[in-house]
Length: 639
Figure 1 (cartoon, rainbow, N blue to C red):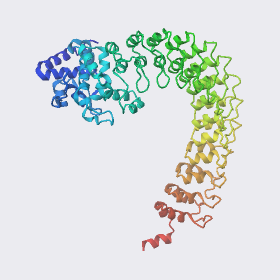
Figure 2 (cartoon, rainbow, N blue to C red):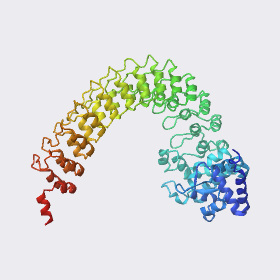
Figure 3 (cartoon, one colour):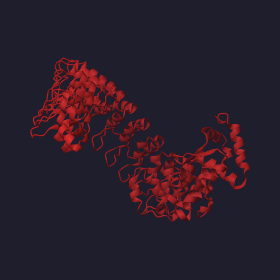
Figure 4 (cartoon, helix red, strand yellow):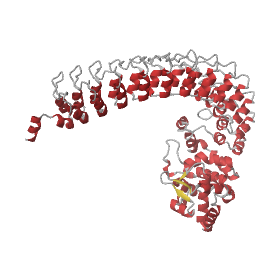
C-alpha cells in the first residue's frame, strides 16, 4: 500500500506544512518522522528529545539543544502522538509508516544519519567520561541505551564514510567505554556485566563483528595491532560473534584470513560452528563446514556438540548438513547422557527426529541420566508426531519407565495429552496400572488433575484397577473427590470395582475430603449412593459434617443435614462436636444452621469440660458468642 490506504494526499499536504514552517521547526519535524519511522524499537519521549539535540560530529552534548516534547509535537503538525502509559512516541497511524516507507526520498539516508547521530553521542565527552565501575546513574543520559544497542544495526543497513570514521573513533579506547557493557547486558549475558566491572577484552573488532558491519571489520583487521583471534572476557573471538549472530559477510571475511583460528573454543568450550549450529545460521555453518581445520563434532564443556545444539533448537538445515558429514556422531550424548534425538523429541522437532531416526547408528531408546528416553520426553510434552514416529519402531519400549518409575503413559496422563495417551493405549506391553515410586498410577494422576478425556479412556479398559491406592492409601476416587472433579467421580463410581468408602491412611473417606474442601457437587453425588455412610468418621472421630462445619462449608453442611440418617452431634474422640468446632473457628453461618436443629446440644461438654460457648469465648469469636450466650449471661451483660 503505497498511498497509506488513500491518505496519501492528506499526508503529503501535512508534510508540506511541516516543511513550510521553515528553519528549525521544519528540520525538527522531519527529524522526528525519520526517527520514529526508522528506529529499531519505539522511543520514549526523553530518548527522542535527547537524540534530536545531538549535533553530528560535535565533541560535546549541548543540553540547550534538547527540545521539549511539546515543541516536538507542535513541529510535527499532528502526525505524532505520545502514548500515556509507555510514554512512547509513535506515528498517528500505521498508514503513515507505510507512506513514509513508500517515499524514502522524503527522509533521505535515514539509517546512516541515525548511525552518525548515535556514534556522535557515544563519542561525546560527557559519555566518554562515564565510569564502567561502579555503574553510573544513566537517568541524565536517556539516549545512551539506544545508541549503544542499535548504532551498529543502522550502520549495517547503510554505512556512510562519516559513520565509519565515528565508529573507528569510538573503538579507540573502547575497553574503557560504558557502551560495550550496556550492549552485552542487553543480551542477557549477566556474566559479561560482572566481568565488565573491570576494563573489558571486548574490542572494537568484537563489536563490529557482533553487528556484522563488514566495512568496519575490514578496516580493523588491517590495523597493525589487530589480534583477529582475541578473546573477550568469556572467550569469544570476533568469529564467534559473527557466527552467533549469523553475519555471513563478516564470517567470510574473517575466514579468508590466514591467521584466523576457526575452531577456537570459548570459555565454555563452544566453537564458532557450535554457535552457528545453536542459532540455525546455515550460511555461516556451511562456511565453517567447508574448512579442514574445524572439528565438526567437538563438544563443549557440557558435552553438547554442534549437532546436539542444532537438534535441540530444531534447525533442520544445519542438522542435515552435519549429518551429511563424516566424523559426526549422530548419537553422541552430552554429559547428562542426552542424545540429539532426545533433544529433538523433547521439543517436538519432527523434521529433525525423522532425520535422526533414519540413521542406523542412533540408539532410539537411549535414556538420559534420569532414565528418560526420547519417547518419555515426547510423551511428557504431548508431541504426537514424534511419539508416533517412535512408536512405529520395533526398538522402542513404549513402557520403559524413568528412574522414578514414571512411564511414557504416566507422563502423558500427567499433562492430559489425550492424543499421546490414545497411541500408547493401542500398544501391547503397556502396563496401564504401573505406579511410580509414590504408588501413583496413570489413572490416579488423571483423577487428581481432572483430565476427563484421559480418565474416560483409561476406565474404558478392562485390564485396569480403578481402585488402586497410592503409598498413602489415596485412591483415584479419593483424589477426584478431594479436588472437586465431578465428572471423574461419576466415571469412577460407574465402575462396579470401585469402593466409594476407601479411606486415606488417617481414615478420611472420599465424602469426608469432599466435605472438607467444600465440593458440594461431589458431596451430592456420593450421598446419592446407598453404600456411602454419611456419618463415617476418621481415626480421631471426625465425620464429614465435622469437617464441613469446621471450615464453614455452609452449602455442604445443609446437604448433609438433609439426610435423615445424619448424626449432627457426633463428637470426636476428645468430645468435640461439629458445633464445638464451628464455634471455635468463628463460623457464624454454620453455627446458626446447627442451632436450628433439635438434635444438636449447644451445651455439650468436650473431654475437658468445655462447651461450644466456652470455646467461642476462648477464641474471641464475637459473632458466635452472641448466638450461644446463655439467657442469664446475656441479661447480666445488660446490667
